[in-house]
Picture 1 (cartoon, each protein chain N blue to C red):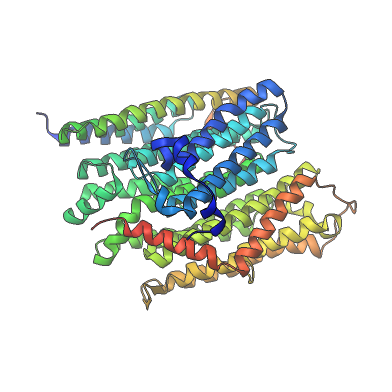
Picture 2: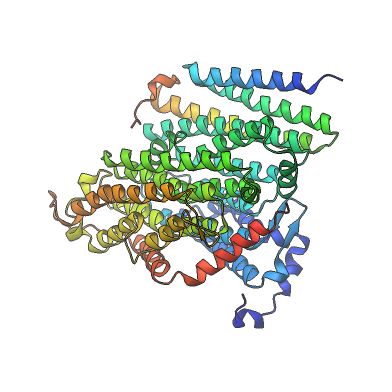
Length: 100
Length: 506
C-alpha cells in the first residue's frame, strides 16, 4: 500500500498551487479553475483517509463536496458573465469600484 | 420550561405529520416554502404574494420551533445521526427565522429589487434553511453542506441587483473569497477526519483529548478557523465584508450581516465546543490565545476603520466586523457563561443591526442617498426613523438601558468571571473590548449629530412606507425589551449553552 504521507504531500502541493493561482492571476476564469484545484486538494485528502481508516465516511463527504463544488462554479460563472455584461471585462484588476 | 396554554393543546399531530423527521421539521417547512415560491410567482406574477407566502411559512416554522422548544422532552432527538434538535439548535433556529422574517418584510416594498422576485424569496428561504441545518447539525458533513447552501445562495442574492456594476463586482468578489474559505474548511475537516476517523462532533472530542494537539490537529483547526473566519468576517479575513454590504441591495446586506455571520459563529461553536471541554485541562490554551488575538484585532480594526467611512452601509459593515470581534471573546474564554453572553449578543445584534439596515433601506426607497451627509436634518424630515436609528446606534455602542448594553455586559464580564471565580487571564481582553466600545461611540454619534444637530439642504418630509415603519417598530421593541427585561431569554440561553457543553463526553 502506498504510504499516506505521499497523498498528503500531493494534496498539500495541489492546495498551494491553487492558492497561488487565485492570488496571482488577473483573469476571472483562471481564478475559478484555481479554486477547483484547491477544493480537489481537500477531496484527495478525504479519499486517502477514507482508505486509511477503511470507512466510507470520507467518500460520502467527497460526493457531497463535489456536488457543492459544481454548484459553486455554476454560480461563479454566472456571476462572471454578469460582470462581463455590466463592465465588458473579466479582468480582476478592473474590479475597483469598491475599495476601502 | 412549559407554558400552560401549550400544555393543553394536542401536539401529537406534529409527530403524525413528520414521523421520524421531527427533529428537522422546522427546516422541512422552510425548504417546502423555498421550493414553492418560484411556482407561486409564476402563477400570480406578483412579488408581494410570494413575499406574504414566505412570511406565512416562516411564521409557521417559527411557531413549530417554539412549541418544540417549550415541550422539550418530547421533541428533542436525533435524526439519522446527522441532525439533532436540542435547546441550542432550537434557539438558533428561532434566531435565523427572526432574521428571515425581518428581511422578507423589508424586501416587500424595496425599490432597488429587480424583477426576479420569485427567485429572490426562494434564495432567502433556501439560505435560511441552510442556516437552520447548520444550527441543527451534529456532524462535520452537515455543517459543511449547510454553510455552503447559505454561501451559494447569498452569492446569487448579492448579484441579483442586476445592471449595477457595484453589485456585479461585489457578487464576484464574494464568490471568490467564499470559495477560498470553502477550500480551506474542506482541507481542515479532512485533517480532523484523518486524525480521528470520524465526522461526528461528539466523537471527535475524546479522540483529540487522548492524542493531544498533534500537528495534523493543529493544521485542521487553524484552517477551519481561517475558513469560517471568512464567514464571520474576522480580521484578517474581513476585506470582503464592506465591499459586499455596500454593493448588495440593503435588505440583503442586513440579511448577511445578521444571519450569515451568526451562522459562521454557530458553526465555529459547534466545532470548537470540543475545545470548551478541553479548556479545563489546559490543552486548548494555544487555541484560546489564537482566538483572543483574533478577537482583539478584529474589534480594533473594525472600529478604527469605521471612523473614516462616509457611506453608511460601509460604516455599518465595519461596525459589524467589530461586533464579530466582541462575540469572539466567547471562543477565547471558553466557559459556559461566555457562551451565554455570545448567544445573547447574537440575538440582540439581529435587532439592532437588522433595524439599522432596514432604516437605510427605507430611506433609499424614499429617495435618500447612502452617504452620511444625506442624513443631515433627518430628525425634522422623518422623526420616527431618526429616533429609531438613534436607538439602534446607541444600542450598538452599548448605552444602557438598550439591548446592546445588556448583552455586552454579560459578554465582557464573562472575560473576567470564569465559572464563578475571577480569572485574570482575559482581563486585558475585556479592557480592549470596553475601550473599543468607547471608540465606536464616536462614529455612531457622528450619524446622530448629522440627524439631530446639523441641517441639510432639503427640509421636505420623507415619506416612509408603512411596511418599513412596522418592521422598524418590531426591531425597536426587540431592542428595548431585551435591554430592560432580558431575564427569560437569558435563562433559556443559559440552559441551551449548558446543554450544548454538557453533551460532549470527555
